[in-house]
Structures are given as C-alpha cells and as structure tokens.
Image (cartoon, helix red, strand yellow):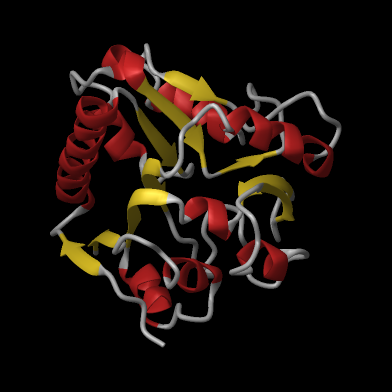
Length: 228
C-alpha cells in the first residue's frame, strides 16, 4: 500500500529549511489567530537544525505557542544526547524564547515509570496538535518507534489510545520515551522532513516500516519536505 502525501522537493537542505520554516510559521500564526494558542511537536536529531535556527527568529506570537517533543532519550536534560538540550540550544532562543516548553523527561527512574505522568502533563496541550514535525531514520523509524523493538506493535496499533510509551532503541542511549502513533497522528498538519538519497530509497519502501505504518493513518495529508 502506498503512502498518500504531498511532496515538496528542494535543491538543498538550506532551501528546504527556508520553505519549511515558512510553512510552520504560517500554520502556527494561523492557529493562534483562530484559537488563541498553538502547539508544535518536533523531533530531535541533526536534520531539523537549520530549520530550528531559522524558525527561532520568526516574530511569531511565541507566548501563545507550546512546544514539545515527539520522543526523548531517557537521559538528564543537560546530557549531550538529550533532545531537550538540543531544543533549548537551537530553537527555544531569540524570538522563540518565550514559548512554553513541555519536557518528556521527568524524575521517574525509567521511561516506563515516567510515561503516564508525561502524558498527563501533555493534557495541558489541546489536541489535535496544530503541527507535528517528524523525521525518519535510515531504518524507517520515526520518533522512537523503531522496527522490531519491544513494544513496537502496541505503539503502532490503530486501536491504541494516544499515549506516551516506553521504547527501546537499537543504539545507545537505548531507553527512550515516545509518543505512540495514535498521539502523533492527532495533528491538524503533519510534516515529514528528511534529506539525502539514502533516506529517499528507504522512503520508497517504507510502507511497512514504522514511518509508513504511522503516516498511512494520518487524518491530514502528510507534507513531505525533502532535498538530496
């Protein structure tokens, strides 16, 4: 089964980041204008860094925007592997500094012990989320939904209630917390952002991988932003 989507293709990563920044800024501004507040769910990693560095300079109504993560490594927020640390360094600065941020890391000893309290904290964010920005790994994972990992079938299940779930990555740090597919799909606008020919080949065969199994159920038509 193919994955319905709209493709936005650019010559390089900087052109892509500029166009995607425009799209996200438009969506967030419209959400605040229409509903008084907006929500943005983002992924970590190196791919969105050019986007974050552009978006944080946009003069948006940041005090009315809440940002959270699609997934998190179960490490201290000061750890170099932390997605929260990356966001604080690269996005939650300059114009975007006043945005509200909801962390996925808490004092619980394990992701399994902390998952319920994280989901409870996220109830302060109205759903559907206004914007969800996902990436894709070389193995077809998105957020921390890795193919073949323990609990992946339950995390991708169509009948699962939206939630944060404990996941295990195949590479360190292995302990993770992730929004499940049902939670990620609660989005007014869903974006997929990746670069490179290698990942394009993964995408071509992604229908049965976590990213494809997730996007096939999207309520809104996913917008794919890609560059070589």
